[in-house]
Length: 452
Image 1 (cartoon, rainbow, N blue to C red):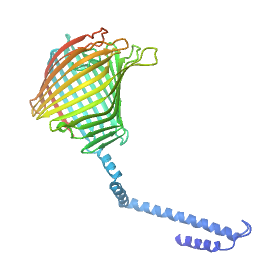
Image 2 (image 1 turned 90 degrees about the horizontal axis):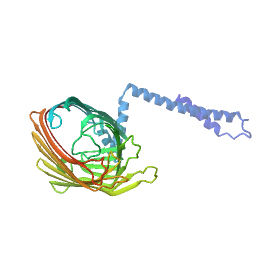
Image 3 (image 1 turned 90 degrees about the vertical axis):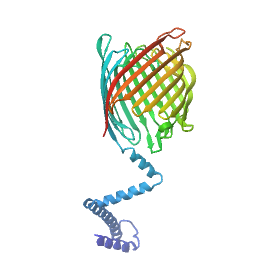
Image 4 (image 1 turned 180 degrees about the horizontal axis):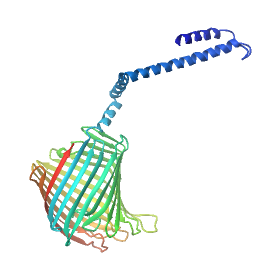
């Protein structure tokens, strides 16, 4: 084949040297030369195709050819000063995947519920990139108000593990689950039934032994609480970058940096026909876990906060502006850690009002080889705001203590006592009403965890 092509090419070159005819199409020698050139070009393409087919057949008969090309390209990528580290980090996000199964049983008594039994189970599959899958559920049977009742909590979630634009989605359901007395008073009722849908989206994650950098993380949560009426709360936050210096905080925690974070939330009744108030907080830079020596770390989240009401039939909203502040001090000595927050913030409530409060919270954790103790509490100077209300501030407070003692590796004694004075959010008096509550709980918990 190659020899014929060379002969044709030689004839084409020899004929090309002849003088050009006076008129095109009247010279049979020129036409033959052009045809010979075309035949030579086609022969060349045919020869290249034959070589490609030969190489493919060789690779199919001996896979080492493929392996050589793969290793050569991989080596070039690995040695690239920019793409090499990015490729290594991206591959590491999919390694070290781990399943974990958990089963738990509990028998408890407390001041509000004379007796209760609970069982729960959970299954999760984690990777450094995201939680690939989780499912959990628990049910509690208890005796209250002269009859047997039940409470349940359950959920499922997971992520679409794309290297870019990683997407997480999950659902949580709860039925007659009791609220903590130390929670902010945004809704009424000791027990709550509701449904929560959450979604997280992140463009890219860099994860190494020393750093975690999330590019463009966005978080969304939608919560429905069912009672005499249904309330709906939506919450979202967006920011360009989240950066954590792993293990650089106090007691092996992370040192964190949030850049230009914007968070907003609304909460209100779904059936009252009133536009729910909106609260938005803008933080140019929030830092946490910055160590000052061996035993103290600080954090600061300061910015601008807006509370917004929408009067019926009016286009322009009414705004309440304030300083957004969350200053943190952490102290650790031995197995004891103390964390104190000074907070100035606004929170929408279920009565189309905004809770505006200055709040001081503290939490003490004491860890021992076979025991754990936590004490937490708050003091708040709060008021309620609406389109027609600007109440006076009232003092509220609360505290709780709970402890766990390990009897065996899987059996624990548990006890908690908590009490609080909280604002009642459905009042319209000049001075908001308050309510005091006390609760004591004790029980035995059996738990089994197994990674695999």
